[in-house]
Amino acid sequence: MASASPTFCSCNLPVVMKETGPSHSTPGRRFQACQRGKKGPPYNGCGYFKWQDEAPTPAVASVAGQGWPSTLEAVFAAMCEESRRTNQLLEQWLQKQ
Image: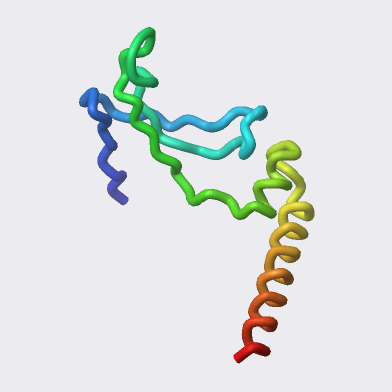
């Protein structure tokens, strides 16, 4: 299986894969960034930045913010609650139709 070709930033350098730290609102979230970092001194990078995944939903992010990796049960519970709320809103909308 062929590997994907590397992504280059405006500095013409391959981007690096990084991960948000434990104090971030979504710890452990992966992203690509310029090797040199942010624009301007002291980094002198181009500031390239791209998340590797989609943003978590608010319910999942609130659980993840409690310490990542959180338990699977907590993430599952948050997803179920969000699904329940979505179903309620859909039912309300259908009743108005």
